[in-house]
Amino acid sequence: MDLRYSAADELFRSELREWLAAELALLPPAPHRDDWLARRSYDTDWQRRLFGAGYAGLSWPKAYGGQEASPGRQLVFLEETTRARAPYVGVNFVGLLHAGPTIIAEGTDAQKSQHLARILRGEEVWCQGFSEPEAGSDLASLRTRAVRDGDHYVVTGQKMWCSFGQVGDYGELLVRTDPDAPKHKGITWLMLPMDLPGIEVRPLRTVSGSSEFAELFLDEVRVPVECRVGEENDGWRVTNVTLSFERGTAFVSELVDAMRLVEDLAPLVRDPGHRRELGHVTAELDGIWALTKRNVTQAERGVTGRGTFMIKLAYSETRQKLGELSMRVLDREALVIGGPGNFVEERLRTLALTIAAGTSQIQRNILGERLLGLPR
Ligand SMILES: Cc1cc2nc3c(=O)[nH]c(=O)nc-3n(C[C@H](O)[C@H](O)[C@H](O)COP(=O)(O)OP(=O)(O)OC[C@H]3O[C@@H](n4cnc5c(N)ncnc54)[C@H](O)[C@@H]3O)c2cc1C
Image (cartoon, rainbow, N blue to C red):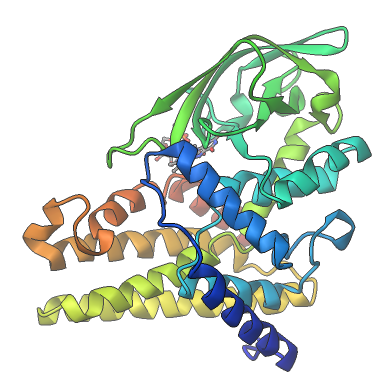
């Protein structure tokens, strides 16, 4: 493992710091977390600024408008933007981190030219329609069906937990095109234009009162065949391409943010027992940070390290500990939503971390089976 940054990376860091200091001063105040139209315009405006300054799509190939930056440089970018409290990727998450990379890997030339530049410039927002009421961890048992009718698929079914469903222009949609094939063999990956007739988006309210995701009801929606990514019935393979992008640097911003939260919480901690707990959490975050750097060092050499499988599990559980500790430290103030430091919203949000992008149990199954070679 080599934890040092190159001189060129450090130069990149100082230029980025300077740019962030100037640009962040120009930003309007962040919108209310439940005003999704305002959030869309705030997040896409930030994406446009990044694009204008040459900081958009650091991991994307140059041929598609990206910067093809090394993993180390991407890490510097995430460190600096998080430390400067720059806006998070927000509503651009699915487009930049899932759909765009999937289209780069599996899309046709026409699909690439239609979508990639627009995603990078913040002109096109995506949501993800994978999970269903009976298909979450066991995603391949999904039942939303698509029947071919000439140049269209006629899609009927229900999707759950569709993040950014209220503001998405397109959705990543998994459908069953062959109900008679074994479950992994009859799935197809479609791009769903969210303005097609027959789509109903119903926002879901979470425990913190926010509505960051939605249910999608699809009633005989006619999706053009040219919206298919990959071959018909080969969608499970394409899905695995999509999900592999979640394991890249998706948690680095979260991790740096958690370290910053520790700094915010530390001055409020008086009780020696709480101080000891905060010390443990800090040590765990330091360990995950070292693992992240090792993964990045390996990625620079083209190796997918084993640590990539562990980051999500370790990070999400440690962040929950931090959220829970912050509630005890704040005591009565912890009863107030919108109180100091937004620790309460933070605590409620962390409940979802061990579920989203694969539950902790599923992560443990993956570690056991793929890394340790244990029987299923
Ligand atoms: C914040 C958030 C955002 C999300 N965004 C999206 C999105 O944009 N698009 C989308 O499609 N989905 C999204 N999801 C859904 C997410 O992918 C699923 O919630 C997750 O995969 C779990 O599925 P489930 O909720 O159906 O739970 P289930 O699969 O029903 O699991 C219930 C419980 O059983 C356990 N379990 C299930 N199978 C096993 C097993 N084989 N071994 C051991 N334990 C098992 C699970 O760990 C869990 O504790 C989001 C979820 C969250 C929390």
